Image (tube, rainbow, N blue to C red):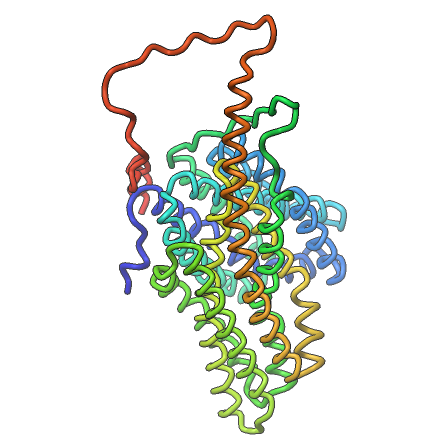
Length: 458
C-alpha cells in the first residue's frame, strides 16, 4: 500500500513533490486566513467574503487565457512564473490595512494560483505518456491531500498561539512553499510550446478555443455538479450535525481525517482501474451512486435520537463519500485529459478546473439551502443530482470522443491545404532539408528520466 505513495522517478515524482510542498503552505494559510483578516487586519466578515469572491471571480475569467498562454510559451515557465507571483501575493498580505488593498492582493493570489495550477496540469500532460496521465494525476492528488493535512496541522498551531507574529509565520510558510514548488518545477524538463495556429486558405484559423468545443463545455458543467461534494464536508455537514443530529460536532474532525487520509493512501490504487473513456464513464457512474448512498446515510442520521446511531450513520456516510470521491476523480481526470486536443491542454485544463472554483463559490449557498433548511428530502435530492449528472455525462463523453477525432482530422486537412497553397506571392519557398540516413527519431519514452535531478530533493 505504501509503495502507492511514492511516484515513479523522474517528472512524476517532481510534479507530486511540488504539489506536496505547495499545498502544505496552502493548508496553513486556509486555516489562518479568516481570523487574520478579521481579527488582525480588522476587516468585517462581509468585506473578507466579498474580497475573496471578487478574487476568485477574476481568476475564473483569466484562467483560460492563462492556460492558453501556457500552451503558447511553455507550461513549465508559465507555472514557475505564476507560482512566484503567488508567493509575492501572499507576502503582500502582511502589509494590508484596508479593504481595497485586500481585494487587489486577493485577485493577484487567486489568479496566480489558478493559472499556475492549470499550467502545471499542462506540464504533466506534456511530460507523461497519455496512458499514464490518470495514474500520475492520482499521485499528485495524494500529495495534494497529504500537503493540505500537514499544513492544516501547522495552521492549528498558529491558531493556538493566536498572535500577529504567528499569522505572519503562516503566510511566510505559504510564500516559501510556492517558491520551493516553483524551483522544483523549474528543474523538470521543458515542454515544447505550441506555435500559433496557422490560418486556412480562406483566412480562418485552423484551431478553435475550448469555448467552441460543445461536448467539453457540457461535460465541464455537469462535472461541476458532481464537485458539490467538495464543500459538502466543510460547509454543509458541520451545520447538519449541529442542528439536525444528536451526534457531537467534534465527530466532524474524525470525518475530515478519514477523508484526507483515505485519499492520500488509496487514490492511486483506485485510479488504476481507469484506462480509457469507457472505464472513466463506468467509474463516474459508480462514484455517483456511492455519493448518493452517502447522502442517504446523512439524511437518516437526523432521524435518530441516539448519538451513537447518528454517529455511526455519519461515519458510514463519510466512508461512502470518500470512495465515491476517489472514483469520480479518477474518471474526471481521464475525461478532462483524454478529450483535450493535442497542444491545448493548458486552456482545456484551465476551463475544466474552473468547476472546482465554481463549486466552492456557489456550493455553500446551494448546499445550505438544500440540506440545512430542507433537511432529509434535500439530502435525497442532492444524491439524485449526483446520479443524474453522471448519467448525463456518459453520452456526452462519447459525443466528445467523436468530436475530438473529427476535429483532429479536419485540422490535419486544413494544415495540409495551407501547406499545399505554398508561400505568399513573391516569397521564396524554403529549400527542403537534405535527407539524412539513419533510423527515424524514436518516440517519446514511456519513462522520462530527464527530471532525475528532482529525485535528489526527495
